[in-house]
Image (cartoon, rainbow, N blue to C red; front, side, top):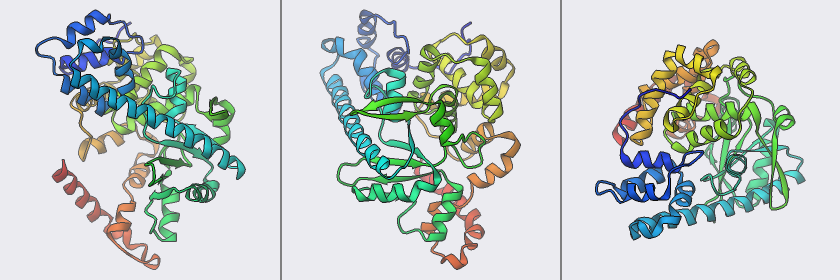
Length: 392
């Protein structure tokens, strides 16, 4: 059956954006021309949406055949962004191939997350899914060796800050899940993860298990491993749910999975229940089916109809999605309650709201007085919330 949730009012620009990014596009070129030539159609608004939702390649590919019927400035802007996306993809592919060889020299096993690999899996092309960085999952024991490899080829650690103390870094290794590196020469960003999700979330399968059940793809002659099957479904659902689905790109991924990578639903639901992420999975499917008017799988339909919290969150996320807003303050905390595992929510919330690298930068306590970070944390949290409101 088809999802019948009444969503928030959508502009004609957003409706066209959904048509252009649909997993099985069916809008005729003549219909697209008719829509973009309507007097009330705002091309700048559409371009702003394309940038925000990071779906430039999909939109460009759909509009390129009718470029003569589009405003010159609009299409040239879209073309420039698409060219940058393709160049970025080529750059990331080159770096990914190089890092692969370097990691293998050091016997560092890894999986490529999201990015180029996901674009290949879901869209059959490296540059069709817009991405800005390289995400790699390794064993926690290899993080320092991986950092030496990356710094050896010009990368600098940007998260955690390079000036954190040994005790601060050890704390972040225990309570966080990744480090971020930047190459200042070309702007390439690499995120090295040693967990798929937050530390206290039960969905954190080992690297060996992911390698055993994963998929592979080739980059410049190198075979790389990536997540697949049920694990890919749960990872993409959690990633979007954690972020609040404010970018359409994440929902495009779920829609692609729904249309072209159908799972064994009973097996997937069992795994979602086992790892405390059924809400996130139902929300992901509900978002994709609602926005793209896709048929809801029978096994999912009954669960969605009975789950009022999921429906409420879909409506909230639609609001942030359509109006291109980030969740801050209370809505963000409410989302943690929604997607975090129920059995360990208090522990999860404490860890999630615990000391951050920002605290280390704001307060300079020596390692011998590390306990003071716990004392100042409530004040730091309030300060950050007030400062966020001023910025937004």
